[in-house]
Amino acid sequence: MIRRWSISLRLTSWFGGIFFLGWLLFGTAMWLNLKSTLTGERYQTLSRRIVRLEELLEKTQHEDSAGRAQDFADFAKATGNGLCEVFRADGQRAYPSPTSAAQVFPWPSAGSGDMDRFLQVRSAGEAYWVLIHPFSLGGESLYLLAAAPEAGNRLVLQRFLAGLLASIPVLLLISSAGGYFLSRKALLPVDRITASARSISITNLSERLPVVRTGDELERLAETCNAMLARLEMSVNRIKQFTADASHDLRGPISFMRTVAEVALRNRKTDSDSREAFQEIVEESSKAAVLLENLLTLARADADRCDVVLAPVNLADLVEEACAMARPLAGERQHTLSVSLGAEREVSILGDSPNLRRLLWILLDNALKYTPSPGMIDVILRTSSQDATITVRDNGIGIPATDLPHIFDRFYRADPSRSQVEGSGLGLSIARWIAETHHADLSVGSVERAGTTFRVAFPLYTN
Image (cartoon, rainbow, N blue to C red; front, side, top):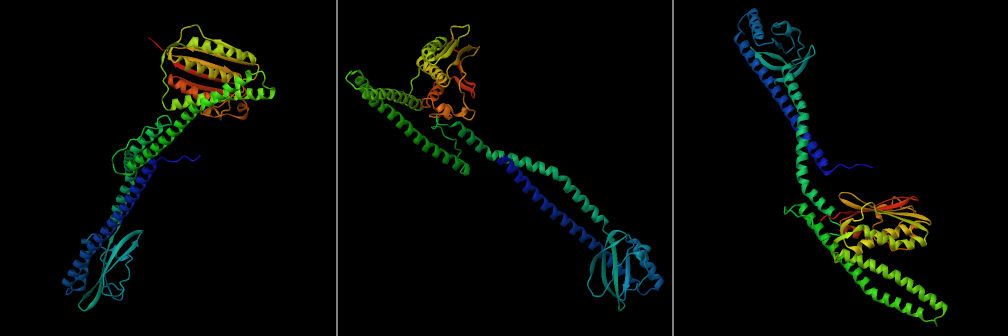
């Protein structure tokens, strides 16, 4: 299964990526600008040198050739690296090379034309900038050449690039941290909406999501979800009301049919076929009455109209009473029903006795139904410093692991082997509701073909 990144991480990665791309473009632009600036400065330096050389040549044009050559050599040495030359249009030197470095330097061809040319050449593995300037002296066309190394420029560019590269981890860290902080702050209302939405279930549809009046998309999302919850609440309330009304209204006709059938069975003149039909009506009416009673109980529970009054009760006595009711049925089915109440005979909890008996009977009835004969059913009551736990354990057919999360759902029936047993699928739903009204924890564990264990833990009552 592919694990998706959270929105915060995605926003952080996008923010960091965009910030890094912007920094890359900015750094590239700055590097190119710096290179252009340094190249321009190099051009200005060579231009000033050429201007000074022009002035020197004009000043010394009337001297003898030896004097002019000496002045030219002195000028070249005084300007730093001594890389200067004066060429004629045919490419011959008009003056002797002022230095040995100038003599071996790979001067580019001056060519022709009356425009300055700014070229880059390489000498001994190093790059040099060369400025070629056309010049006329005494009616003769000359070309003044001056060169300067680019090593200084390259050093500055390398240091600038090293600084940019060294700042990558720091910038990425700052941008990622800033992006994560901003994304978490922006998505904080989403977390609140999510937490509120998770807390809303079928039992508390009247609750609503918090709406922060920001005028943004999150406000509209919360309002839309609240409108949806309102529609769901209205629909669920209608279903609950219909279930309660139908269950209540059908009790009378079913009771009437059962009564009529029972009266007909008392008539000795009734033939055997009619008697068998009336007996089936009595049995089916009894099942329907139980189903309607369960539906009415759950409908009242959903509508919070069940008036359950909790009072101190002795849980040990209730366990004994429920087991006493179950023993005749266990005997008919050849089951062994054992009860263990521990050393304490007074286990006081806050509860409603009729509902607690119903809870225990539902658990015992399940054990009796789904345990093949002969079977073992154990009922154990144990107490601790904080709670009292009732365990109902059998060695029946068990419940598949895929069905365990759903057995408390209404009308849920497990695999076909369990569905062969008569039942409506509402008993465990009622048991869970009774446990919740008593602030108890109802849990189940089961192994197929090995048995099922139900546990319900009640908080102890202390005066």
